[in-house]
Image 1 (tube, one colour):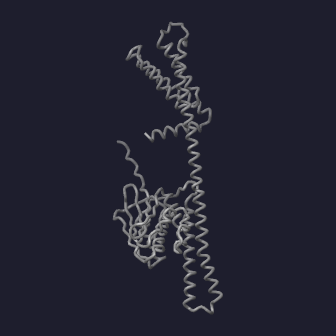
Image 2: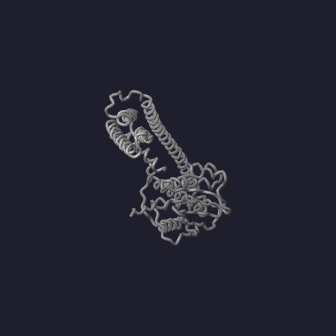
Image 3: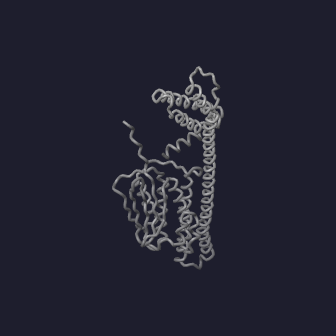
Length: 379
């Protein structure tokens, strides 16, 4: 029922977008077809059921409803109402030799049918207007949501850029001003801090370049069927190069799974979640990465066994403000922008991303839909 209703609304919208001449041409042809069909059915009822059949007015009333709900304006419904009364009076109720006025005594019937037509046409026009207003409102809400996400993303970027840049600048200044006074160990620590902050900045720039692959207008991306095992394996391999001390226990189904995705983007999501689990869990416990095929979708879960997510951050994980929801030093680098980018990428794939705590730590799960199989042709 819902697809038929949507198809009917879509046809009405296409009719409204046609040039005025084509709208009236379409309405005229449709009215002629409906009235011809009603006349043919009424003649059939007359032959089968006799002159006094009460089904004939119902036939015309039904097709009059179709005319009023399918044509533009009020004129066609009123004209078809006049034709129906004329048909009742001249061609059906009285023999052809009767010279009485065709419409004499039938003004009430005409007014009744015309009222039905005008009421249905008014309902159709009102529904079309309301549909347009609802679409406009949904568009405005979507634009407002996009602007809010952009503002949060810019705020997260500015915060996450400022933190490592401040560290690089401070460490460089200390090294330059106190080089002769610093021990070899202190110098190595300063250089190590500069290296880590620089490496983190490079990773964040990669994230920003990755998310620009998504079109801002409609959140559409180019996807192709990719092997889940290959994409996950590439992400874990890159994660191992970045953080050799990180231990990941991966569990992937034995079945060969192909998903429509942008492999580079999903690989980046996987790396971001694994890196967050490694950097923010608070200990060096191994990280579980579990892939499960669940009906029409595939889920990817990154589970750590550390401190978990602070309660005051759970409601702000994906809005770009998670870095302000926690006062811990660890949460001030990486949590602001990485999860926002992950959410954007997964949403563009028509999937979902959730973050929650479990008994021994935190876990993030994102899902990707499988490609819908086309129905086999009817024999």
